[in-house]
Image (cartoon, rainbow, N blue to C red; front, side, top):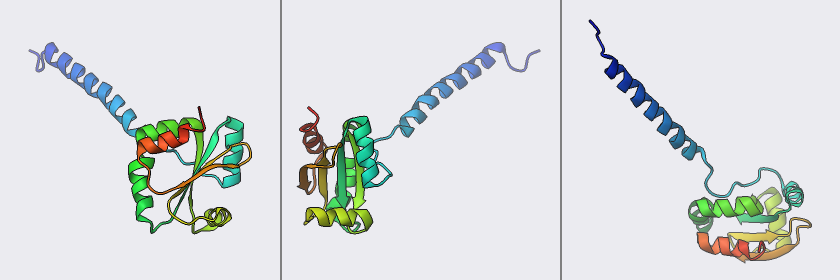
Length: 149
């Protein structure tokens, strides 16, 4: 006498396989980066990386207290399509404009409002465009496309 008929065991194995299969794909989707993958190095390293990879440089200058900066980060910079575009075309750098290297860059460009977005030539760091304020995902993608097409 069998405690578990073979069809019951087959169903358990099949069910476990299905759970494993979907578990793999759902966990892969959860670990996929969304939004812009900001470079962890400094400004000069970002320029060098962009030159090597033949990309442009995108710099996001923000302040910790800035509400518009927080909205831009939450709604635009973390957008999947924005990330796909900027990660392919730019080396991106996020800098606090009130501290360290970010403060030096902010002073050198005469920063007057937050957030400020810089689009730079990756070869020499020349500013191609400087814009301020909140941008929707499509606006930010369109701003970046001007220099990649």
